[in-house]
Length: 348
View 1: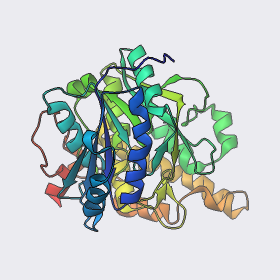
View 2: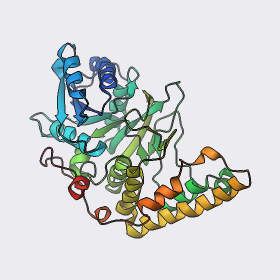
View 3: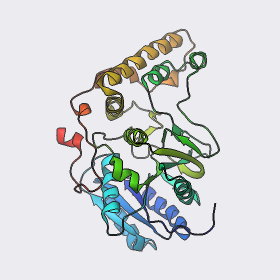
């Protein structure tokens, strides 16, 4: 990687939700990247925390050496991950000298030195790359899932079955991409991802019909359909606590059931990418696979931790087929109005 600085305008967006101390630590980690990225600025948004986070962030910035290149953005509403990031992205792209790249990073993600620089280098080297994602690390230091293939009806069956022998027999393509070298993936983690502004202008921002989860998968599916690439960059390493604001870790809860919005987001993803029939079939496929796993469990062959608690009941309760909102497009433009309520909130 070249040692000379990059002169690109990069805006990083951190969305805080009741984790102000983590957000300030994340900002400290980003500060180290400015030696190689002098055009780096940060929008530190608060997603309607309502717990004093805004005051804590403001106090931290008031005495921070980073305050000259950080903008605090208190949002009036908890509109979810995609909506909150869209507010930052719009501001980054609507300013007189707009960002050329937008970096989204979770407040519970601590980037290792050079992590953002590695993403910038990778995306600059491939003009068809719309996104570049980091390799996430567990707090203990081992690699966790960071790059994936798109969910399909078939993959939902095998996810429900959770039977490795069956997957080997069917020669199923793994959902997770595991490699220590840069590769193209179908989608990459939204916890630390760099987007090309040009691609977002062409294809739109995060779908605001989602509250939380699957919104980055849908966006990258849309970008791929338009001919853009997603890159996985293992040299960009980010230590990720995961679930600090939600209690959900890597799509499953360690102590509690998955929240209802996880199931609704999953259903919307399939409805938007595979159509209403695909959404229904994906749920039925998971249920069929789950039946296999349940039979194995009763025979003493299944793992108790394979699924979140009461996942079957919660999937059925939240609906197998799409609802009216799932059929409605809610993809905002980069130059649209600021702070307008997301589609799901207008329906609530």
